[in-house]
Length: 218
Image 1 (cartoon, rainbow, N blue to C red):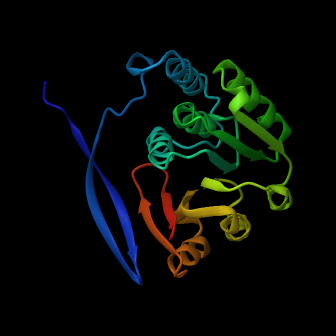
Image 2: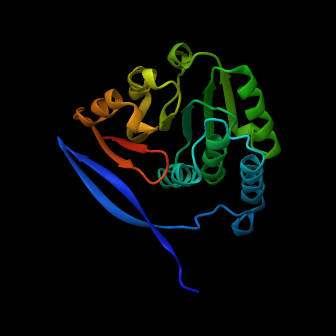
């Protein structure tokens, strides 16, 4: 059977130039539990699948970006991941798929109590509650309390706060670490911040909801 392909895009920022790169991605991209390598992976994928079916993915990333989060986190061999904007835990579970292999930990911030409660339920259903710390409260205030070295950070919260989040987490990100941000087409000030800082290198993956991938140079 001939495989059907769809065209996706990556935007590469090089100085003031923007280069659009064409890449090919499967039209029938999936995250089927039947493709799981381990029982833990299968359990997480089953919860992710059920969240989509029951529409409990409020303000979460699409499948393409979830897979990108996992891929980047695992490739970075991340031990400490920090997420700003837990929502109901969908993106957090994608991080957990990577962290199960790296034996790492996710610290995730959520300002809404109801969403934080639902996220905790999803983490427990997936059997990953011990590798996740959910911090309730305003991340603008809570982030300054962090005392760890970050391997991967992910920003997906109030769009007007992206630059402030970046400024707060950047000193904690290790050299060679990654800062990821979602819906970047909505935050031009953030895009400017990560593309004009000489200590950072960024690309923009536009297949899903618009994901920026920023490397903190060594």
